[in-house]
Length: 212
Image 1 (cartoon, rainbow, N blue to C red):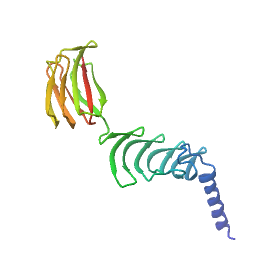
Image 2: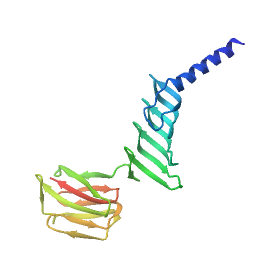
Image 3: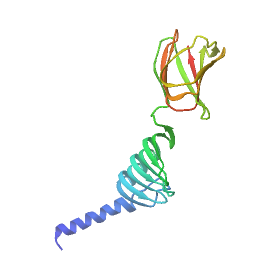
């Protein structure tokens, strides 16, 4: 046997040992047979691990981390970003019956087609902060309130201008202004002494509290 051929066989044997037997995967659902890159005894870099479920893509410290494809035992497939073993970032989930869901995930939870549920685009110096509180997903409604020194005050001075999205009508009491039947994403400006601009991307019932 030629020296070069023997050397190649030894390298391949060593590589198989490192990639398979000596490389651990932390996620129990995919732990089983692993092939790929290793670092300090853990799956790290590009690899594939087959257990109850199957994952092929980037690993870090034994967990899916980066971009990869995760195939569940029930036939569902997620193709997208992972962080510390969980779906986190942009991706596409295809169910076993062919239905697709695209958008963004946070810690395995689907948050919608946008990376952020809401965002304050600008605000004037009189506002200390704008709070967004998600109440439920049963109704698409936004309740807006003004708070001074931690106490809810009269909302009659809230003047709203729609930039994107739509709504049916507005209901108002002394404590809040309710924007009803909202079509998201909803981008708006609250004008007046406490001027700010914001967008809410995720459908549902929201409370927006403007603190000053």
